[in-house]
Amino acid sequence: MKLSVSIVFATLGLSAAFVPSANVASNSVALNLVSVAEVTNPDAFTKPERIIMEKLPTLYVYDHCPFCVRVRVALGLKNIKHIVSFLANDDVPTPTALVGKKIAPIFNFPEDDIIMAESMDIIKLVDSDPRFGPTGVLKPASGRTDLKEWQKSVQSTLRTLQRPRYVATGLLPEFAQLDARHAFIKGHQLPPYDKPEWREELEMEEKLKIYADAMAMDPAPMVEELNAKLVELDDKVYSEHYCTEGGLSLDDIDLWARLRSITIIKGIQWPAGLRAYMENVSELADVPLYDELAI
Image (cartoon, rainbow, N blue to C red):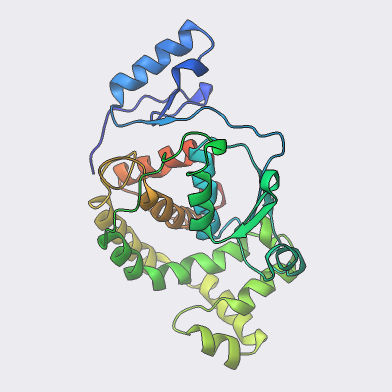
């Protein structure tokens, strides 16, 4: 991973990866901070000016859902003010009334009376319509297969570690009530079960026990395995600002959204460059990591 010198102005809410537009600065001090950031971070992403519409768009999401996080990251990087509405995991009527089925994310753009699902379609809309600010801010997906292969290689490990922790914290908004947690467990299998087997052959009591056993087991061997895989990934991520050479792209939208959930697992040891990447995108996109909830 390519690393650069980082200067973080924490008390000012500035990240080393965030270089505000010059016309946003209100005084000479702010301009000086920008010039320092530019010198020390030649690869930094310039965040567009804030877009605040008369009627704010609403994004319906589950906090843990990587497809939902994709859109939250895109809206954050584009600096678009919006309403985030967290759906309860067992809420079927709300998404069904909006788009005809239980799904997330859902984007409601009242100015055009548009209600749409599918994360990449939403991102395409907001990055191609000038009402959402400069277009083409996010570079296209590169088509890299190595990142997809890495994600596939850790899929089973992540399901085993992440899914029980989502519901065990009791703090994610979609799992605030027991009904919502049970709805998630009912529909989301843990290895070695596949989805049809989990949904059709296991009783709810069995599923609850499997989740409880997963939380009770010693996670150390799987955490050690995952730590080794993160070292592998660190070599594939181009810099602490973006994963593919050339700038922030749809590669980052997908990769970061999936990596975020790893921060709910206690004991993860992030390589320095990869951790900087996670923190930089988190601050730019205004989407927090789960560090304080890690178990």
